[in-house]
Length: 359
Image 1: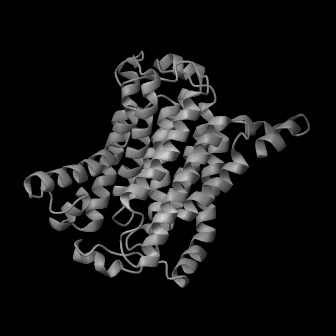
Image 2: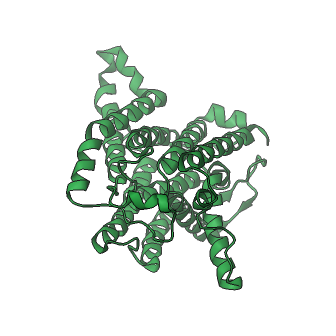
Image 3: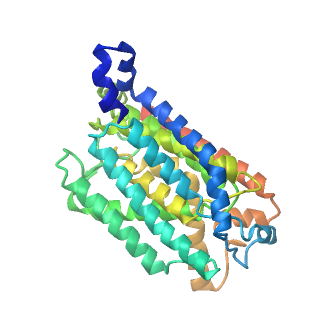
């Protein structure tokens, strides 16, 4: 909005030229979300507490988590609202890719909100039935994929793999189900990673910093050409969105750090996970995002392995899944698990970014 309203006045006040720069708008989008979280976070937490919107705890989980019962949840709402407000201020209002991303972000947030609301009203850890959550995710993911597929963008169905400069294969119509599975999988993988104080917020900060770099270089012809990656017109504007999310997650982490005053809930984890995959599809980094979010892949893989092992062998591989609970039950302090997973998240992000020159 500020770009559309203030930049035309540059002939009267030359400093307004800064609104053309993605780095400037991205930095201030992050600052805006951070300040909004700081300003309204305590009020939202008090409102959630007054409405008795508290977290239900799994009875089979670590005993140390029992004291968290009743801690306000659904804190992801102020991540979503702060990002939406910030983007309306700092984004290019005519960029379709950003609107698609914001639409998917909000839609997944609605699914998560319904899931959290049912958990709160039923006073247990069971919200939407699995089929209901998956059905909602499928509808949103399919809508996104159809929009991208019929956008008319050249090479939209090409699949790029790290270490290869050119697309490995053109998936054609199969790109749609591939993308649907990626979006749903990433959304749930991030959701599974939300179980310890500060864990998910810290990992998402690292993830979206990496995505901000990827969107920025993908949206510039000079950088894209130099690195041998596909140039995506308009993708640079997603840098503003990614940095807005970074600011929001930092603001949320202020209240979510151990001992947490508020939990993110599915309203935050499903929306942020889903939008990670959407951005990766837009900039043709579908495979690279699996490296960047390596911790999320490990988390969801541990759940799949645990379920399959129990169904096939009646034995558990881990003491508890997702795997961060396994380490807790193995004697690691919660804060140690969180910090070590953050370190892994940083390593995966560095490895992913380093592949851009190794091709």
